[in-house]
Amino acid sequence: MYNLNPVATVTANSQPAGEQAPAAPGRRLRRAQRREQILAAATQAFARNGFAATSLDDIATEAGISRVILYRHFESKTDLYRAALDRACERLVAAVGEGQYTRASLDALVGAAAADPAGFRLLFRHAAREPEFRDEMDQFRINMVAVAHRELAATIPDGPWASWAAQLAPTVAVEAVMAWLDVGQPDPDDAPERIRQALAGFIPAARS
Image: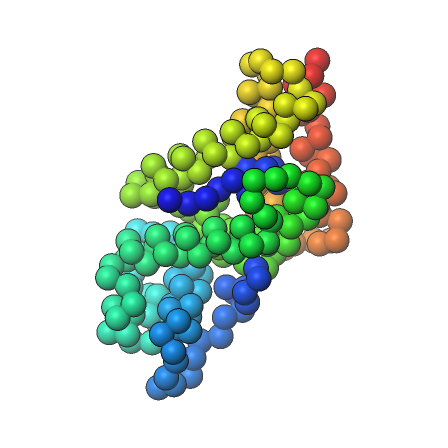
């Protein structure tokens, strides 16, 4: 369901979720605008407390709307969570690109995480822990590893150590970006290069 290849290359155009301002009470929005408002609020709420601990009332409050309005757009909490995951993934694709890796890919990944921290955390920290979404997230990781393996093939001979590096590369990239978010996004201009250094550390080991 989710296209994860951009992130798998080891590594938004729209306004970051954390900066979405709720509409003033009683203000009428077009359907697409209202849906975006709800998804932005849901991303914030789910990334803060997880799927099970977040209620539709919590999301309605976050969005500054009634539960009745929320139900006009989403049939259930599961439906809303899937839509929030799709939105986060689409924003990541828009920022990072799809199916190719260049030196700029990691810069784009860091930039996407900084622009939408809640969406990044939702994808990479919370969704994999939710039983209802585990299958999708397992496939997410399989895609990431497959693309990493393809990208690393030019520098690491095929074999078990190449597979080891492919398993490790997306994990290191994502966890390094997540840790950077968690400590307050220090030195944003230098962050991609520091993360590259972390990624470069295990490649010589896989070659030897």
